[in-house]
Length: 367
Image (cartoon, rainbow, N blue to C red; front, side, top):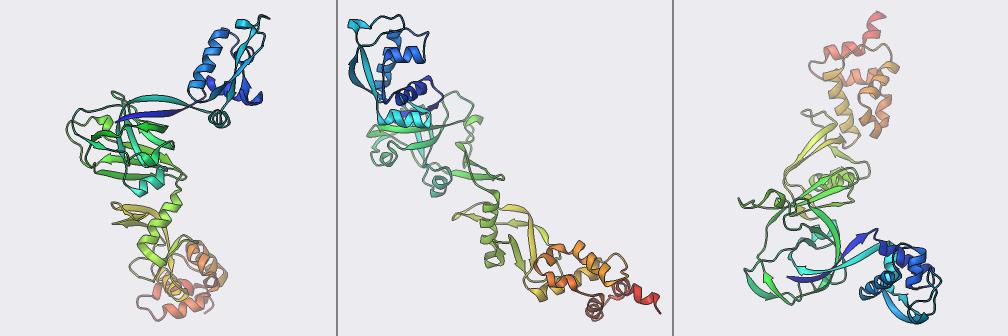
């Protein structure tokens, strides 16, 4: 479609002119531009530059003023034009950004996914300078109307350009009729890092004639914390058993799995209402769901894994804190468990002779 847009450009010389006008109370002249900012530029060129910024909406003409130039001479007829900064110019000076106008024919893809809109803050995901002569002309007045004059973060991939670049634009106007294209099915991937996420949008099927540079329709970066995504996925998988405050899964005792640090594979992870393909979360903490489950967990672990002899209750309790610290973090009362209490519990179990012997080592020496 035919678009009239403005591209956001940073650190342009125009910014200094806008800032100087603000400092001078909102008005500026060509001689001020030359004397304060662009000494090597001819006075007429400074004047043309201000007229150019006026055409773009950053200034408006505000009459004439008698002013001497750097050579001590007046401008034409002893006067020079005065330019007053507009609201658009003040905003540009404050944000130190400049909007460069552009017109052309573009291929535009607009996402229908609310999740993409929430993640990248906008709904238009790709705008490519290209137009096909195939397709049916349809009215598009409602398609982009809500995006007019709004700052939009887009993927801008020019023709023959291998590198994908992210730009910010504002759509000022567009044609009412354009060529309509069908729905494009895509795959959404989210790679989450500690404090940032890469959002990738890929075609669902790659055709043979699709170039490698076009494999990704879009790639955006957004502030998204890894812990927040893990919380959402674990809460969706384990429900109320996942403690978001402590970031642990509370689970009943099971002799088949005594690990409290586990890797969790989620077959159908759901994030923000969208189902993704299976994912594996590493280092998820599991703890017993209550104190009695914790006692059973500790008992089973000691029965299978105790690897030393104990000569005192203090030595035994120190061992518990070293080996089972994560359980005692949530059930500190178990940290005061004595050897006798554990011997009584293990004596009811089969194949517990050697474990009990290690706990009773000090008693044997007193016989």
